[in-house]
Length: 139
Image (cartoon, rainbow, N blue to C red; front, side, top):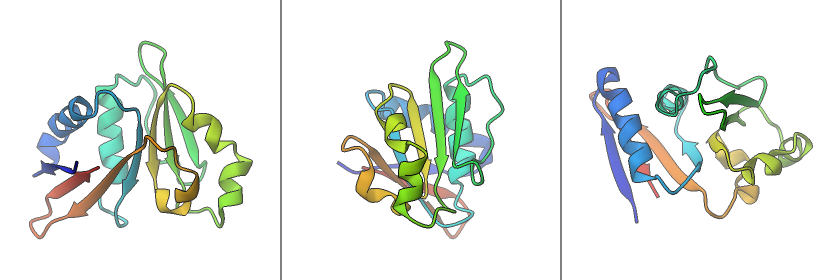
């Protein structure tokens, strides 16, 4: 079932992150699709804030995977596969271990590793609308 969530501006970003987690409360693996500048990293930062991550949340573009801890010591993994050249690079860093861990996993540019994404992953497409608001299509 496809769900949609609208983010009209940055002021309601945190509210949208809270609603997103409520809608997906039984899930913890998410693949974020969207063009450069669509707001994937910004939204993931808001999700991490809702999860009470105590670390500074930054884009893992160069490190590929950032691991954060929430205030209850639960791990949160933030991945960005924009720069990988092939699927073997993901295997080399042991990405599958993260997928089967109990922590939250937020993946940017999942299209680069689709063949190894977990079966229970939630797909999220972020699109920028004409008025610069965002719509998230969640399936």
